[in-house]
Each structure stands twice: as C-alpha cells, then as structure tokens.
Length: 208
Image (cartoon, rainbow, N blue to C red; front, side):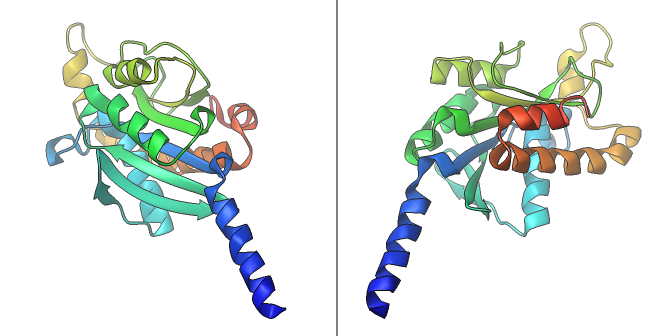
C-alpha cells in the first residue's frame, strides 16, 4: 500500500513538472562581455543577475545562453541570458521555448526602453519592436509581435546623434543610487507575472 502511494506521489509530481502551463521563460536582453556589463542596454541581464543573487541561483552556460532555474509555488522559472549578442536574441528565445515546451503566453522578455523615464517599468502583451534590435529579432524568429515584454525605462537624455553612445554607456551616479530599488521592483514584477497573471501584474506594476 505504502509503495503504491509513493509511486502515485512520484507520478503526480512528474506530471506537474511536465505541465507546460506551469513553466515560464524569463529572458533578459543584453550583450555578453565585461565591457557591456553595466551599460543601460544590458538592463535585462542586470535584472536577472539580481534575481539570481537574491534567490541564491547560479547561471550555467548552455546552448545559446546562460540558464538558471527557480521554483516558486508550483511554477518553474527558466531565466535566460542569451549569449548570441543583442541582435540575434530571437534564436535563443525560440530554441528554449521549444526545448522546454513553454507556451508563448508564458514568455517574458526584459528590455531597455528609451521612451520611458529612468526606472519606469511597463509590462505589455504585444507591440512593435520600437527600433530595438533585440526585440526585432525575437519578432522575426517567433513570427509574431504578440509576446509579453517588460520594458525598463532608461530615458532619452542624450544629444542628437548620440543614441548609440547613450544606450551603450554606463549608468550615472544618480541613476546607480536609485537602481537597486528599481531592480527589486522588477523582481517582484517577474514573480507576479507567473503567480498572478499578466493582466493583474500590469494593473499592479505599470507606471510604478
């Protein structure tokens, strides 16, 4: 009898682990390499690095990116930092969605946004790439603009013709002072996305 119950429990646990609706792919966009580490364009990497640090997770280099796995209340979060460079991010996203059998609605892409004030956070379920090369490649590879993206505002405080220098530049001292609180709020948003759903999360965090 006890053996039967143990086997039943193991089978139930296996089924839960295989349920694709309980798995989420959280993708932070950025460029690999030390020189990009603290740049505005790498906020996606920075959010996931802080998530991993807070939860004691370790990233491991696997195919097309660095991966860390986190479990919370029956959900599995697969954190992905593509190592393909920003302009080819879609290849890694598509590969891991297919490998882990994760539905498109459980994908969340974290990216910088010039059109939002510094530190402002906004979750959207669809939209254009807005001229962002990482989002553009994801759109091309997934063949849709209907995927969740978490935009982190980096503001547009640059002179004409200096956009590339700005996004690939490092945070100012003032921005760094406020960054930790914004990163903490970002981690809360990611957890809420999986636990409370995208609509509730948008209502709770957008513009906060």
